[in-house]
Image (cartoon, rainbow, N blue to C red; front, side):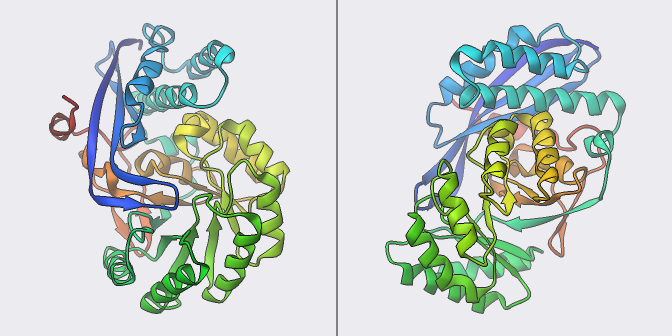
Length: 361
């Protein structure tokens, strides 16, 4: 089996409403869809994205720029393809859009490998579970008022979630505490509540806020300070009882290793687009296991399920509904768990009718 066609499509997915975190103002997501067609009629699929479509054309060109290392090759030689891309990006560095492009290609190749074997990827990798814990992350934004937070939290429970994440980073600490208190009261003690400050705090302010929030039994405090401030993360981690989660903004297994060596996290959160695809995500999870640190995936719910179902230290996947309209298949969520699809490859296939509607003009 050889890859005969390297096909990309640009789309824009509008969000239901404008939403905000402490550092983001989001109206839509722009995506580069990748389809690797083969001489056996199989197609490997993946995507990478940009918030609000910022520099989407640059991301697209970066993905296309690796096509000469992929077309005409056997996808089972995925490590060789990965290595060739890694070497070629050396002059411009192993972060940013080159890693996103590598991620798209690596994930699409794995999708092909699973489809050729007629097996879902979690079984190719070595399955450890057939359903995966998830948490609702498509709401409880900083732009939502308290009434909206309470309503959204109840909607998540009605949808089958038993865990959800609230964004922090208000101008006043008391406002964040009030928001968390309102959601905790609305959902009760049996539902897990996670929090995310999106890197907006100083170390001292993060410790102050964290201490105010400890009585609300938060499952974790995510990215309290800049992801580059590993010492600050470690200081906050030692000062608080709430577990510290981070990693979504760091790149490749080397970035994950740096965070682990700094003892900066209790939960490591690789992002498929930044970590380097399924190959590098598996390596990062393996490194984390040597530090006895669990991992939880960031975004890319559909593609990350196979990792969570095959890595024993992967405790959950983040559920973001923004991209669900791209796929023919629906995720099945019951009692806070996503059932792992049993279709070959990633288990989710592009809905081309939907893609036509989202296609950038």
